[in-house]
Length: 454
Image 1 (cartoon, rainbow, N blue to C red):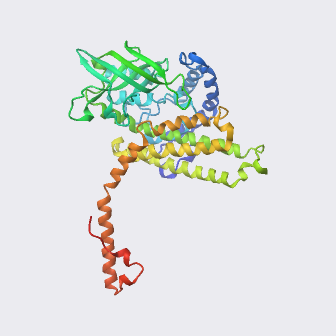
Image 2 (image 1 turned 120 degrees about the vertical axis):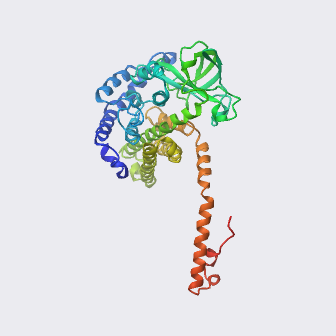
Image 3 (image 1 turned 60 degrees about the vertical axis):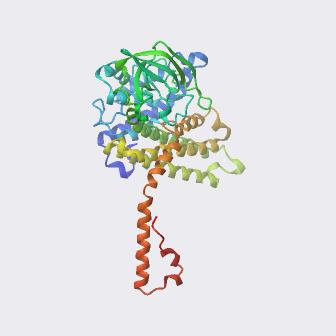
């Protein structure tokens, strides 16, 4: 709720946004979370899981539109299509959306559509916006994002091999993609594809382009849907696709040849904030489940309720600390994006991307442990929440890639840090001399001993 906004961010949130944060929270708690079980039941079993989408989602969309909860993710000041919220304000809404499986889609704020709509809104031509952006923003169709490939180290996107060759007024695509989230949905009508259009370019970051590919284009084969720790996420799905001489009109290219990295970096920055805030929402819900469990009077191992076990209260306290600290990291990144754009917030975005999924997994795991056997089966949402968030340590770049970049950038301060410390030690030496203290005879002598400059 809006009264829970951290004080350091409270004055940056408009009265209108606070109102909608409360509306989102109420909608999620009273409508979406209860609908999650119905959603799962309406999917059904077997191959038919991929042939339809649950009706309850459409009903929730109608209600969300009436409440004005639609496309909240497009930040004001950056897109003319924006409903008028900042990244910070939407982040606070996304935390609530992350508590439910269906909430984000019900508000047309689900990945990968959010990032794809941002690409089209920022870089798309008028024709591309008319053909794809408008129906996406209206919630009439869905989309997929195709970047990762099965036979390369996709953590380094310069390795991308799916070829994109110009032939007259068309581009011809050949290759494989996998972890193509959203490709299983029958409503998915367009793929945003990153491909290698100029493998000989001297700059490896200008060899790739982004192109819009109709999902029904001849030559595309959906080989299979991949599971996530046993969950297939139907009907959304994560597809392994093959492109064989797939022809796409030349004007479907986004922004221009060789601009792929520029586009994708612009897409992933805000998306990482969305993932992080939804993960915080999931952690909050897991903590609620843990609190319910440890206060259940029927659960009395060794003659005591779980809440009377010291280690359990320690889990609760640590979870509260970790969630609240992580929220501040993410909101700080959102504020930095609002102030200067994603390019000025690379460090802050990386901090959130690395820290939050690991935190959420820890909190969810504690809740699972508190539930025992019930925690790892379908009787609670905890197991599926854990599986979903575990993927975020890989999605949008593995943690290790961001840690390496952060460490390298932080280490650039090494020379300055050394200079400051040596100067401080020299000042201490001079003070010892001024006051007539024999530094060598004191316990602090080694502390002020200067070293050669690095």
